[in-house]
Image (tube, rainbow, N blue to C red):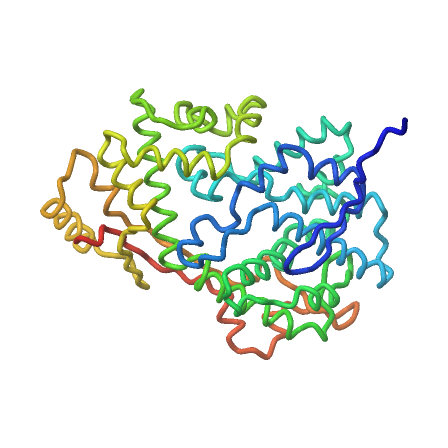
Length: 409
């Protein structure tokens, strides 16, 4: 009797790129690993679906899309006689596939509440190193490139730069799933214009207008989607819920939640004590843990936790005011006084119901330029090469300030 072997050279169907091929058995096994499968249960855009109902795509979609675009980039560069060995190509596919593996549930909200002092990039690296042990060192080159330690600079730039494969996928993907057409960049065209000069990733001069569109699309997507005021207030409310839950947990108050979620609520997790055991538990934490806990907390005896949880579950969000300058002390105190008058206020609740913050968006950073290639001796930063007057303006960070408070006020 013949033992059937799994066909590991699978083809996936993506709504944006069509058929995506898994290039080899190692990458198939990495995708099949529970660490990577968790990304199916972590949404790419957190609570943006409260604004754009279609934005339910996951980090899994994004990672697979990035791997596909990286295959195209390698193909284009090899066609232009840039030498990339099979080992380097494979390392690029693995590094881009795993670049977001450390993202927590609801993306950035966890980094500001129940897991402190350690970024998702650091957790991604911990996952990669753990996988490298399991796969007998086959991820070593991918980790070297991911950390920017490889001698060939352009390999790292494909993973992380201002025109990297990550951005080429998420702008196009998020634009598709939200329906915000302004973000629909031509990733194919941008990849076709890539080249390497002096070991740096450059864009050929005929691709200049595609780069201009890319930078403008990024700016529009940030203000229209990623920093949309409703998404912003929902994410802040989620942070407040998790902070309150953490506060109650530290007082040993019982909080119904999955075992995984309880571990992070009842333990102080920092970069120093983020052990292999913590990583194993983190690898099981996803959006479902957070949402199921919030649903349970709607009937919790703590008024702050239950009220905030009900508001998120029923999409009864705070009002948010946004302006170009910071809110004065008087404006904030005025809202706090209104809260005291109108609502039953318990000790210590004010900062959970009236709070302010700021957001910043820099569409293009000249410290890490996108270079337009004219010839070997002539490579110019896009901000100088472009005849778009507003491209220079996009190099300045734009800051906006917000104040959130309950609508009843």
